[in-house]
Each structure stands twice: as C-alpha cells, then as structure tokens.
Length: 358
Ligand code: EPU
Image (cartoon, rainbow, N blue to C red; front, top):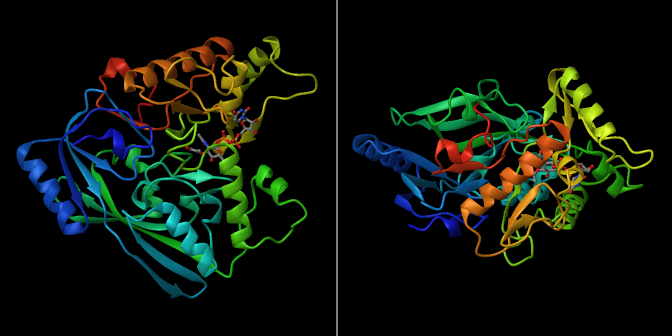
C-alpha cells in the first residue's frame, strides 16, 4: 500500500501491511493480529504530520477511521466526544456553528481528531490540552480500552505522555472535549488580536475566519495544488530555552549582526520559566529565507518554518534539507532545532539529531 498519497508531504515508500479500522473492535482486532504475527504497528491519521522514509515501513499501518461526534450538556459545559477518524477542521467548524467556544483558534489545521492529543496541537493562543477532558485509547498489548484523563495525558508544548512514557503503547480511538456554549472566543495571540483590529468582542465565527485568513496568508492551510501545498506544517518545534541558554543565544544573535536597527529577537515566555524562541525567525536569520533551497525541496515561500515538497521530492531529500537548515541554525546561533513531524522507517543514523529522544 503506497503511503505517500496518504501524507500531506507526499513522500515515502509503501506499507508492508495496511488496514483501515472504523470501530474500536476493528482496531483491537488489527492490533491482535499484529501482536500474533510480531509485527510493529504504525498508526496513521490524516498524515499531516508524518514523514515516511523512501524504503517504506515494515509494519502494519493502521488507519483509524472511528467516526461520530456526540454532544452532551453538563452544567456550563458541552462535552463533545469525537471519533479519532473525524477531520479535525470539521469538528472546529461544527463547534463554531453550534456556539461552543474553546477550539475556534485551531481552525484550518489539517489532520484527524485522534492525532491532536499526541502532540497537543496548538495555534494562535489555544491548544487542545485546554479543552480535552479525556482520551479513549486501546492498549496495544492487551487490546483493551484505556481511558486517559487530561492530567494523565501530561500535556506540554507539542508534547504529551503519548510521545513519552506511553509512546507506542496506546491507540487513540475517541477524544472528549469540554467546550463552553455561548462562551467568548480566545484572543490571546498578538497577531490574531491585531488582525481583529478594533473588533473588541468578536464572535467565534469571526475569530475562526480570521485564523483561516492568517493561515492562508502563511500557506498553512491544506492546499494540495498550491505552490507550498505539500508540507507537514511547521517542520521544527520552536525551541524553549532556560535563562542561561537564552543569555548565550541572545549574545550570539547580537554579535552576529542579524538584528536590524531597533529590532529585538522575537521571544515569548514558556512554561517553567523558560523562553520560547521563533524557529522561523532563527531559520531566516541563519540565511534560509522564505523559499530557500534549490531543487525539489525548500522552505515555503510564505513561512520559513515549513519545508515543502515542490514536486517529486524524496524523503531522503527532505531529511537532507532539514539537516542543512538545522546545522545552519546551530552554527549561527548555537540553537538545536528538533523536527516536529513524526519520522518513520528511517534508521537511527538517518534521523540522528533531528528528532527528540522523548
Ligand atoms: N517568523 C519569521 N519568519 C517566518 C515565520 C515566522 O521570522 O517565516 C517569526 C516572526 O517573528 C513571527 C514568529 O516567528 O512573529 C512567530 O511566527 P508564527 O506566528 O507564524 O508562528 P510560529 O511560531 O512560526 C507556531 C506553530 C504553528 C501555528 C502558529 C500560530 C509551532 C512549531 N508552530 O508557528 O503550528 O500555526 O504558531 O500559532 O509551534 C504546526 O505546528 O505545524 C503549525 C503550523
């Protein structure tokens, strides 16, 4: 089964085995089969955050298509349960139409509901961790249902227990969100507030529309035919540094002569007293401007953080280009960037340094 067409980057070889499961029982049965055959399992959702190696994957690729959205009012909140296979953007659209606040800033993000808790999908001042109540999963080893509370999910910036202690152990089948009927939209991101301008009390749908326009201006909407259409969104996470690291990097930036007159390096406070830097800015100032790269792989012409398959690229070319960018940023500013998409089918050497070890 060819995997490239099932990913938004559009590269990579085939899956040795492939199955689609639209019920929890089918997920469980597929896991049972793989267990008996001693075959590894790769869970596939919308394929928007996945880079598959050219050699493909010697695994059972399990595409989770569990569908259905149910809503139940509990006091002030609407508990909304969505199947892992529902399209995330459809859920956001539904919530906005119904007047349920809490995920409106997450409009226009490609992929399926089931993938959102894994990396705690976030944008424009919201993340799914802010709305998730629990995540229903199937344990790979036993085929049994395991409910994970939000606390057990241990959400962080683009991070959760599913990428750490529970990595490879659970398959998400349903996610329950607590949304606020009639609630006000979240407008916390400076760029979003600026775009909304004098509209001090925007509606959910105005916020959603503004986010969609912002994402479109950065080519961060699904647009398979567009010039930046084949990408996995942000290719690197924004680095978060402690004070000592920040001081070191700020000094490197100041002495490298990349700051324009009166300009400061963009940064935001992050959790635990750390500071988040803008990887897109670091990439540009390390000499990789928007649209950089020759050949079939390069940076998006609208956003330096997205690596784009311009057509006919291989996974190896994408990894090589990502490494060039990473090394350029490290050499210039002493900052290590780590890939945000999940890389599968590669050897350890091929991805060394590109992925975090969590
Ligand atoms: N910047 C540049 N050049 C660029 C892009 C960004 O200099 O080409 C600088 C600017 O200073 C800008 C700052 O970076 O002010 C932040 O840029 P932006 O608002 O576009 O956000 P981002 O940090 O690059 C993150 C998420 C996106 C999310 C946006 C909006 C990560 C890795 N990425 O990007 O998520 O849509 O914020 O909230 O956290 C994704 O994860 O795939 C993704 C698209």
